[in-house]
Amino acid sequence: MGSEVAVVIKVLPDEPGVDLDKIAEDIKKALPPEYKLMRYEKEPIAFGLEALKLLIFMPEDFEGGTSQLENIIKKVNRVSEVEILMVTRMTL
Image 1 (tube, one colour):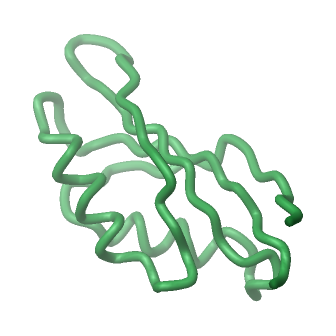
Image 2: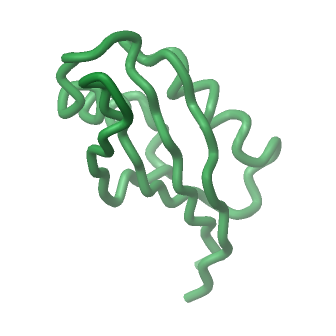
């Protein structure tokens, strides 16, 4: 089995009060099978706005790095912004 990369991503919804659990579920459904949404949490930002912080494992040798992952998440309904917070290599 090859190495994986752990990616921590902040996702901002398009408006306050959006169901972040639904967005996380939609992101999980949109990911290709070789990507794994390991967990997520909600993070308060300001004025009732919350962000999602996602931990996603993906293959290390994926061409284009995290850009494909960012593009997949940006296409999910109610997603406004996507920011990569951290990328680290995982070896087994």
